[in-house]
Length: 213
Ligand SMILES: [Zn+2]
Image 1 (cartoon, rainbow, N blue to C red):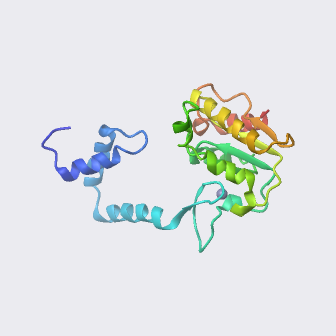
Image 2: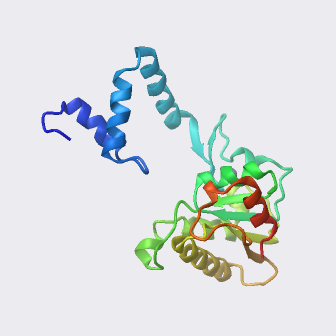
Image 3: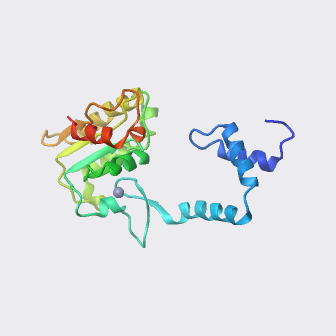
């Protein structure tokens, strides 16, 4: 970036470049795109971003972001009594929930870990919602959820980080749920090794869910 860049432009480039997968080059494209937009488009963007903070809450059970009415603490999925409360699917991130929901084949509940770990070191582990997972497994009713869990599906990605994370999650579950009456399963074959759930097509994901073991 040229040194004579306007500080106003540079500031926005720096802000955008902190977004996931966006570097300085893409960030500067965003900024030059915005410069060309009419005022009302800019207002729309500002309002949409503000609404994210003022109207969107994280579900108190699964951490799925949702549009909250009144004092609701649970998202539409956790609140839906038609869903199968014997199933809990543990996923890395919000987009994985969207991908699995799109298959329409899974009717249970979720828990979003908030990422993956590369190692099983304490510092790494603390970046994930492992403590939160423990609390919800110990006492789901304290988070507004009545469940009678029969199966926990560990649906992390088939990447090295996803695999380390799966080991950690399994260890956590086993420490808490001492009896073996709850089945712990993983997604079945079909997902490409190193691939990610969020990019898998619906049929592949459907097969992986159906073939879980
Ligand atoms: Zn929820």
